[in-house]
Length: 366
Image (cartoon, rainbow, N blue to C red):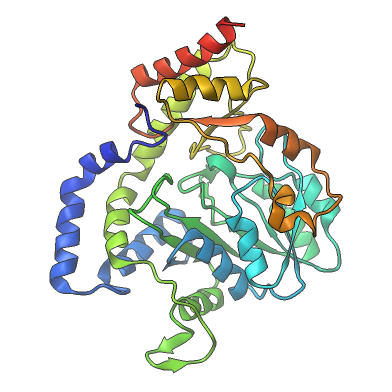
């Protein structure tokens, strides 16, 4: 069997360091916002090139609290993509705002800056681009649009830890950004976890207050907050992985390049890198008219595969009524043909070639 992500191989590499750190945490009995969370926040802020990094309970919470801290609320419109995981839009709905879904670039699958500009109204208060599958969105154009229209820019970096544009990390372009540490992410915990980053002292103070029951001083509460703190034990694990994140991302890029080279002659579309930034391949996602046949062949050989995302957000039952009549032709076309192959730092060249051989067999049999 070849899994989508080989977490066991990764754990074997960091096992001693992680287990020592966990044992020390248990021995010290400092479980909530302890020294490892504080150290991880400092280390990620330094790595990402931002002033503040605040650990929270999940990537969804990171986006939610970032929107709240930036003053996005009831009736505000937030422009975003429909080709993403639902957490992007959930966070917008949580604050009472309205997600305005626009179309994507047909090659990168990232939100189209031109579509953003066309969707701006007097109610638009923010733009939330997603750096999908690990490829940075066109942040220069998006930032220019936000600046010209006085809009907040909140980055969804839940799939892009370590991706950069001209040496500047995703997450460092907007007013605030949210990261996810779901186990399968490029930087993944052994459970849920998230991070909000910002250069604003005011935003950071609000996030710290909101994540801890609306409290700056224990048992004194100024606003209704949330229980959304990064767990100390997860911070131990994340610190071990953070030291290796560039190595892991380089290995993902190596696997992606091998895949694309081996499939260059096949009638399918391998991932496109637009050259605007460094893609870190959270997913390796292709397009094919014969997707279902390919998935069936891979599953028969016990090879991991998945479709991210089969139903765009504007067509989900939860949004159907408010998005009635909305057509996003590129998004819908991509969703009908996309599929993802295993990719992680520990995928061997032999396994990569085996996966490609199965795909080639589908086309050879026609």
